[in-house]
Amino acid sequence: MNSSLNEINKLLAPPEISDCRKILCIQPHPDDNEIGMGGIIASYAAKGCEIHYLTITNGDLGALDASLSHEQIAEARGQETELAGRHLGASFFYTLGYEDGTLQDIPSLSQKIAEVIRQVQPEAVFCPDPWLNYEAHYDHIVTGRATAHAVISSSLPSYPKGTQTSPWQPAAIGFYFTSKPNTVIDITPYYEQKFQAMRLHKSQLSEEMLGLYYIYFKELGQQLAAELDFEIGEGLKVLSPLHLHCFVNAEHI
Image (tube, rainbow, N blue to C red; front, top):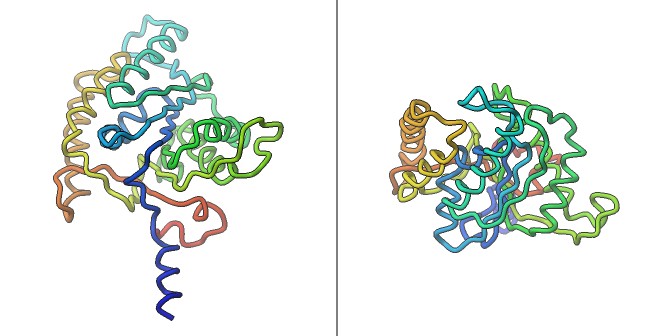
């Protein structure tokens, strides 16, 4: 009986992600990784983890400088992506080049994400939580749903059809921008580094917005860490591939 209970408890627990040696951080737009989990990325880099970025759209819809064309914005944001990512410790960068605000087709995007997963072979994949209540940006919803589908499908021998890549199954998916975190990572030593990286997105984030975010994320991080032995945390909803399909308890893990 005790053995069965232990197995059930393991099944209902989030996967352990602290010792990952390679991760893939997926963002709908340039800057989402830094804003959503910048401290976590820096903490992984400090442990020698190999960090890969996948950016889905070119983020060309808007900038602080209203005189820039869509092409100029996309070019600037591509440069900012790599500058900010490298500041946190990322070394590899991929982009799918969709236009900002155009994501609709979850199955099609899932196939493209799965190809990257199979090429990179990360132990864990990260993306925005597509089930966040009141999330209005469809690029975030589609990216999160497509990533989840890619995670459960990338182990299939021929997914996507015609692929020349080998199957790969990440052990975990971590959703950032989540209201239901089940894993809190200590980012106390990396909080300033997170904001240094965010500040490199000069086309998007004003000093006023950065100041507001600095206060907000510190307060949120202190709340997440209130019962833990550190000062500031970042939260993730971490699930295994098994939790992502026909698993009615996933919401409560």
